[in-house]
Image (cartoon, rainbow, N blue to C red):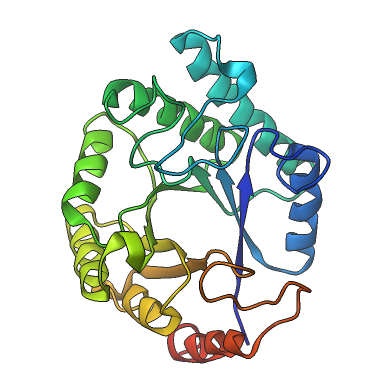
Length: 261
């Protein structure tokens, strides 16, 4: 048995009419997720396109807003989306206010080079989420899987500016984020220092090894992992026709070892 959480990336209007990243398609997908009895993580990118450490561009409709208007828009937009999902009974179980945000969001104002402004924007999104559903779990997701100094630099800056969140998320791709030993060392240090649950919020390769690390953190407080992207990133588990590959069976092993025990 594979226990799954579906992670859904939400852009402002990416590929309108073609994909599943506008509000209408998000609501449809949320219904499918909940109907299957799965958990649901919603990842706001706050962009017209994919956001990651190398690109955190404002939606075109927000480019001329001053900073106060921009902060208000983050709050209102997050609230609108979650209110719409709540109205149809499909609220997410967890929300990310930004994707891989160690370099910030909504550049230039929300760059990590402007931590005060970044903190204000993150607090606006988190406040909206908590207003709609106070128990909802909020994650800060950074792309620094094996990089402890950089991880603590970001988290310390946000915590010192009173950004309140529930879970630490880390991406881990060996090409950019170090060795498995680096990953284990960083996640363990983060758990010890901040006493918050830690999730590997994106990974693809070394599935068994990454999950072993995630589920073996001090105090057994690793909450698991989210694979990205199961169709075409490094070690896919589905083919282009959507059929599962034999490699998906590793998750049965992981479930038996770490979830069903």
